[in-house]
Amino acid sequence: MVTVRVPATTANIGPGFDTFGCALALYNTFTFEEIDSGLHFAGCEEAYCNEKNLAVVSYRSVMDALGLPMSGLSITMHTEIPICRGLGSSASLIAAGAAAANALHGSPYTPLQLLGICNDIEGHPDNLAPALLGGLVASFVEDGHPVAAQYDVHPALRFTALIPDFKLSTHRARGVLPKEVPYSDAVFNVSRAAVLLKALEQGDGDLIRVSLTDRLHQPYRSSLIPGYEQVQKLALDCGALAFCISGAGPTLLCLSKDESFDEVLTHRLSELPGHWIQLPLPVDHNGVQVTLS
Ligand code: HSE
Image (cartoon, rainbow, N blue to C red; front, side, top):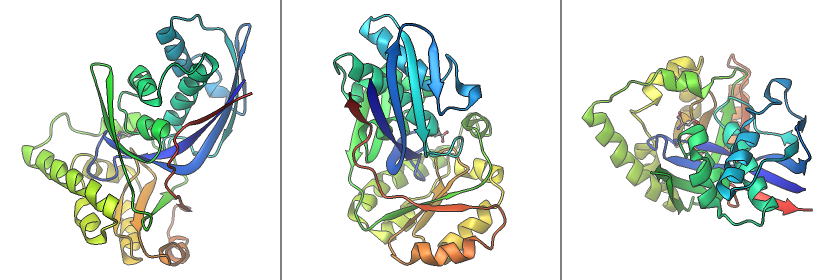
């Protein structure tokens, strides 16, 4: 049996669409055990207790890569990461299944190799890479070959997730994106993305303010998130350095340096409609963790 703990992840982080992601200290924990046949789930919504469960799909991908037959599986889940909220719940399942299959068969693959094997399941690596590797990661997969660069996040920086009481599927949020973007918008994002990584490493608030911006996805998606503009205004009024959509949303992410930010925001956020939950989340530096027993 293997126990697997996977962090939540926030993807995009402003200009790094489908590229940047950061692991956050909110965890799903799973146990996997191979059984003779069939699938047995505990702690999982009925609708997801089947072959299409992403933990099963990724487990199978790793078994295929190893050239081993798939046995039955018993999976238990203790989930803290909310579903369909832009905090990497799908990637947590993929990372868990991949890490479990790998660990139960001698750990032949590194976390980066698992990214290469499983990236196609979601189709973009920005959640899966930090879920596997931990910390802030920029990544891409080219012809099945995973490439990832890890960056430091200055310890004075604080991430706060603002989670609404409604879901938004990634499928729907990708559906509103245009097929093409103006050259000037592509250049806007490339330049901000490069500067942002240095700004996050150095904890440079002024650089974060000007570089944690985006023209590739947020302008198209913000209207899918009722309350977006009010929450953004409030967060910036309360001293956030920057504000963005976490992944495909609907969670909104604040970056701050001021220790009083969360306290100040709490009072005023509760006055807004939408039942927003405010969750300060430290960076997770470890990525997926496995324990064999
Ligand atoms: N980069 C992805 C998106 C993250 O914004 O659609 C969500 O999985």
